[in-house]
Amino acid sequence: MTVEHDVKKLDLATGGRYRIEWAEQEMPVLRIIKARFKQEQPLKGLRISACLHVTTETANLMHTLQLGGADIVLCASNPLSTQDDVAASLVANYEIPVYAIKGEDNNTYYEHIKAALDHKPQLTMDDGADIVSTLHKSRTELLDGIIGGTEETTTGVIRLRAMAKEGALKFPIIAINDANTKHMFDNRYGTGQSTLDGVIRATNVLLAGKKLVVAGYGWCSRGIAMRADGMGAHVIVTEVDPLKALEAVMDGYEVMPMTEAASKGDIFISATGDINVIDARHFPLMKDGALVANSGHFNVEIDIPALAEMSVGAPRKVREFVDTYTLKNGKKINLLGEGRLINLTAAEGHPASVMDMSFANQALSAEYMAKNARSLKPDVYTVPEDIDKEVARLKLAAMGVQIDTLTAEQVKYLASWQEGT
Image 1 (cartoon, rainbow, N blue to C red):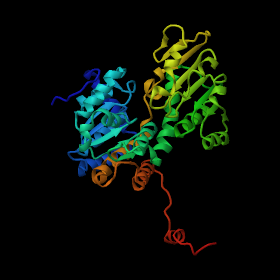
Image 2 (cartoon, rainbow, N blue to C red):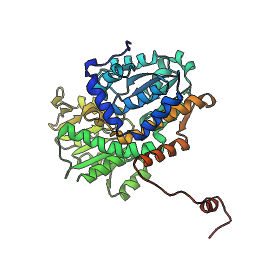
Image 3 (cartoon, rainbow, N blue to C red):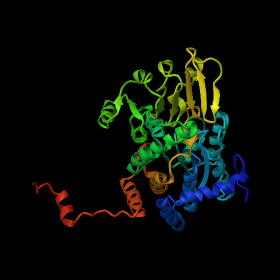
Image 4 (cartoon, one colour):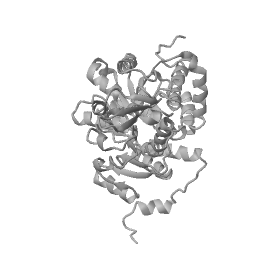
């Protein structure tokens, strides 16, 4: 069977398959769902276009959906996050059409999204809302055939809620990111570890003793701050939300505006989901040799055009994922991974064991959409609580952890207002 695709090299498939199988060992919840999906076929005949990071963990989600009966096409959700051997394996070993090449240019990126939409999906699966926004901007003829979708990440949920608020969203979408078993674990522990992994792989820098500035204090930034602190860095947090800023203070970190932090930091990591968090006001204030990275979904968090305009000549690539910009004042600013998600650009993304929960939510939410989407209005919905708790229950069981259950007396007490003290 010939599977349509655009990947770097199909002969990378064997190595990709080994890594996919290695990741699967750390994804016990998804394995349980996969076994049930194979038997029950809850997605039979459902066309899904997925725009996700093409990694070993994503491959296991795609295989789960495929065994559940779905007809899937996958494209990359970021030009630099694709693992080329995994993309090749999905085509050659799993017969799943994939359009993704690590390092693809912007035009190719959107051509790949277009190819995924040519599949005429009934369900979308997004990481950053690019496939949904493309549908609503330039492929509106496909909207009538779509029953619903899912969205993986904070940035995408922000975009989709803006669409829903304006009445522009044309079909219901489940915000996977809002599940407790996603943002409390994937965002915090996954992003925390993998972001620093990416920074270290890109630079080989020692974090201990460095001043590390984290922009934002949402779940992702909490994880980055926690892990950096654990590795001996002095963590500074910048925020615009007074509640999150207060929490960062109570967690033991210095909190200040970015204009003040700019002159203090050795390493800067943005993870806010907003634009120009680090911009022309900040670059001249930075130390000579400062490292600037992003762990938010889009590279717009760092004002790269402003950095280029303030620099003398073209940036110099000093390491594979390090571009050095020389400012007109003589200082050198090192941009990591072209300002794209450093954990996927320079490293391998989140560990499989934490993606196990996120992708379990994806699979079960796809099943929920297949059953219920036609009764839902166009809006952004939270993952149903029973799905969230089932994922947590399965994860605990896989870890060999047991918990208490309420007695009948306790259930009655919690449901009563008459017991009092």
